[in-house]
Image (cartoon, rainbow, N blue to C red):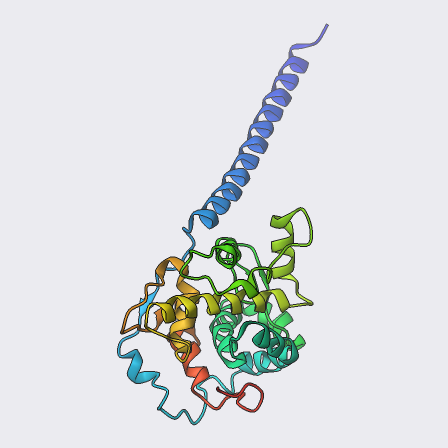
Length: 283
């Protein structure tokens, strides 16, 4: 027969085990809620940035304005970026020939994505991106070196096949993003986030830009010579692309070493400067 002391000990052990079990279940529930909410946020567009509109952006980013030097040219982040993107020169030129999007325009869209990543995750930049001189590739809510959202990638694919879409760019591109497996969701993610081959990340971004260009050209407001506007619309998404006569740059607000930049203005500041002009000349 158990003593009263043994009974109390067993009761205490039972209560402790019961409490730990509840805590364990609660922790897993929180993890499940977090992962589910993240998935829902991405698929419903809740992670999209509302952004800002630049004041007097046309004056600041006028193609007739000469930029003697890019404001970030001598920062460690830019030095790392310059060396990293130069490694992809051949790939970028191939994608440009394939899509008709000039290399410098494509790099202009890439600049604010990479500068945002380099400046927002300082430990990772110091430990990985700066010493290895590689581009940052994201794999959570946004993917790859361009920070492509799943929703954006799917829309880009769909526009290639929809002849009634204002973003349709012609039959020659209908198979540009065909899948090679029977698992398109997994394949889409894998090819965009590939850290060793950025070709699909560049291809998705270039096709997106080409689709935006087609929409605005067909509406009578071509913006193929306005990289700051194209970068802004890349940042804001297809749903915010509404052709009109007086587009302004803007997009997400970036804090670069204490200086505020909009997504579009940083893209334009690079494009209209002489930075990397010997590698990616303006067209």
